[in-house]
Amino acid sequence: MAATQEIESGQRFGFGANWTRFLSALNEDRVSAAEASLRDMLNAEALSGLKFLDIGSGSGLFSLAARRLGAIVHSFDYDSRSVACTKELRQKYFPADTQWTIEEGSVLDSAYLASLGTFDIVYSWGVLHHTGSMWVGIENAISRVAMQGGRFVIAIYNDQGWKSHLWWFIKRWYNRFPRILRAPFAFTIFAIARIAVIIKYTVKLRPMVAIAPLFTDKRDRGMSAKYDKLDWIGGFPFEFATFEYLVSYFRARGFTVIKAKRNDSWGCNELALQRNTCAE
Image 1: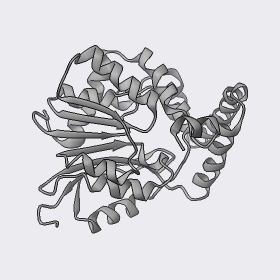
Image 2: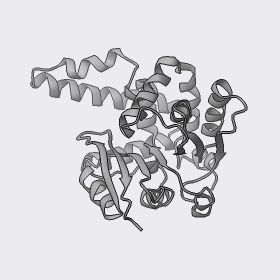
Image 3: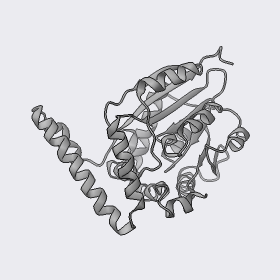
């Protein structure tokens, strides 16, 4: 079933529509922040001449960041509107560029992935847990990492036990609701969640930890708190994994963690990995 049909039937969140709205908030500060994020995760000041695969390019922000850092970029996304967003950024910043390819495709399509060849850097941030077959997507992504020291950057939602399963149902309901009811449903859910967090940190005598984020729309990596919230409440399909499981999973497949950030709440566990040169 095509992405558009899945979105209309409530089986999938319309990430492309969300990213289209995000582009109206995109500015140079956000692009620079995305570049800084890539440099930090990869421990590199530039990506000159390196082949960079962006799996699930979304808005196209990180494909743009990689291209500005000198990488040869191949972007693809399952959602046609996300593909359009990425093309819009290319047209704005790198018109007629032959070093940045953008296509519509699925990470679950093994034949399509195989046709791309391998890459020095494979990047898939907050994407594979929304495919409906996360581990298949991860394996397909791994197969595109160059054998000689290729790097893989990935972010996967943290497994919070029963809380993650509760969020699965909330996300499912959100996508099944008529569009007119989604905004009030999301507002109610976030209000309840925020109140609970404020109470939690007030008891700990640190209320501003929960209150301060209410007054900013900026996020690390150049993203937007507003559109991240829509992504979170609507993001379905939805899968998750613990930090420890991800680390052991990748180590068993011949990767070394070069940078990582464990998330103990409802965000993503973030890993930058490098394929061991002795891996076969």
